[in-house]
Image (tube, rainbow over all chains, first blue to last red; front, side, top):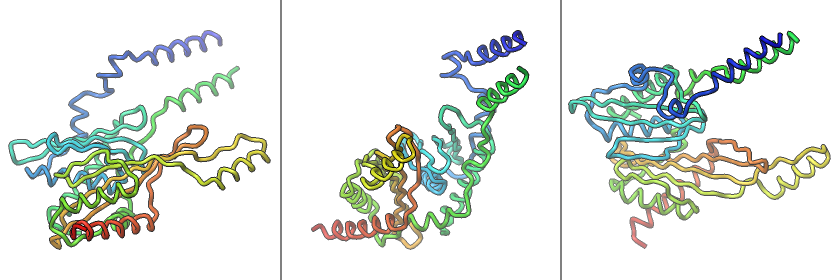
Length: 136
Length: 171
């Protein structure tokens, strides 16, 4: 029995040994995989429109905006309904599409569940539709 | 011994277990009502003047501005204040004394604000403001909450209406 306990203790202590490198540059999934579910493209080249829609969506979701940079196309906020932080960045591609990328974390952990991002982009899609057609 | 082992494993799995974020960032049924509570329309075409007036009101209310990005119509601000009334503290201390436990009461709070202006379809501008706060108790534990008190939002917009009027008329 002692042996079992000892081996469990060793396994656990080994699994806890994440290096600094892993903390700073590591993710638990491949970069391509992550980009995939953290990004969506929209058929517009209006940066201001998309950025404003991002802010409005984040407000609908209970975020308080912490930082925003129109030139860089980034917005960061803290959610007070789902205690978490999120950064959204946008970039224009071929002057006809805008790719929106979001990444979020809760406490010390990155959110790596695609569904959470899917929810966010669904809300953003709705907001873009509303604003593009000026329906309130 | 087996029981202890099972208990130990359970505790380990519970602490290392995954938390699900599947419900995160989903629009709930209340978001339109919240948007309405947090938004007012102003009959002006001058977004900059509206934002200047908004910043003035926030300063009147003792906020310090964190960030402003006029091209997005955005202002963020915060302020630190005491939390909980003296009466509440005394009450909690007395209760704890009776129960023989450590009293827990709120000591400070940080209030955050996001204010955004957007063009509306009536050729004016909408201002949307959100208040949220982090509250710390005497044990240094924090909790967060979105402020949904209708009166607070109404009061703010009344003040902004006055400020827009004053600013516009340059008194």
